[in-house]
Length: 438
Image (cartoon, rainbow, N blue to C red; front, side, top):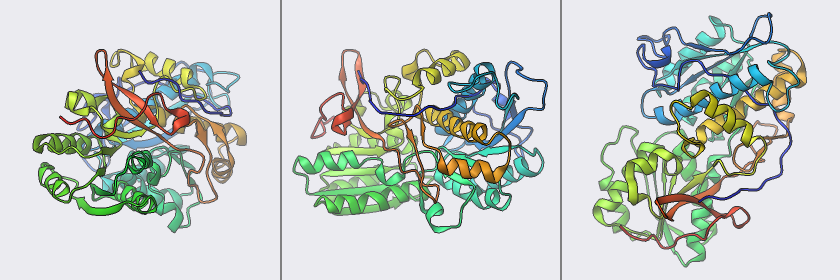
């Protein structure tokens, strides 16, 4: 069983509440009402809980991928938003002295962007101009998040991006109102490279979805691998709508790769694993970003998960600030969908942590002054229930305080369990290397 991940942290806020059920998949008038059949995203979902004040509520707006390729991650991220709403409205969160925020209830207004960047742009315009929300949270995925940044900046709305790990848009543009709450994509599976290099690997293959986040993963990890003395023998970007990953794995196997890293999202991790198994390809290590360490991955591939590694941003056993507050609130809101905290996806923890950051910035400023909140988002150093428990950004809003562990599926009494295998100070087990085969 995955043990504890130690980290020092500072205090933070917690968050808010549940409507819209257990997340649902939205869509065209679907669960939670997040869908809609046109570009405006329908009526959206407004989430509140027990009243803490008779004043007008503070409104937080976001879109999320409740349908489309990123729906698993987008839905679970929104579930984290919902858990925060209940926590802040009922308890004020870990740092709150009273229910609510600034003495007011908090409402969450969300729409389904269907994993589509252009749709998300329309939805953020609606959130700003029609719903007139007070502050914003980001959507899921770097591709969708980067598409809405110009709208947010033009309208000077403070925004936390909890699931945008591509840093290029922050480093290349003049962005003042947005910060990143997740580690940069170039850090995700460095542990797989380190483990392989220390075990004599000589080369690697990098395969990834041709969109913003997976591309930034490749661009961040290839130089690092080369610094460790590994030669890149195969480098391939594949289309977002791919259905058959077998040709990719055939090319990687023919190239004689000692290690394979990349992917993109949960469907990619599942598809690449199944493809490798189907051709009997078993290199030193697989390192799939995002999808390989979520509960749904193991449910999809079963025993084929054995030995597969990936970024590990959260587990219920992590010893990070306010983790118990997060899991208690989350299970209170979503107990009808999840049997135990082990079923919680890390994207939910990231969504909750991002809300905590926004709330603490608002509480520190004491009013809804967008420029002042944005300044606080850049200056805060907070302890959060995510990754190594740290939120800290640089002048460009890029996350500099955080780094994920490397997780690996290993044998246990009742099947497979995730273990932290890198870095050493957070490890709960020795890594399995080379890959154990099929």
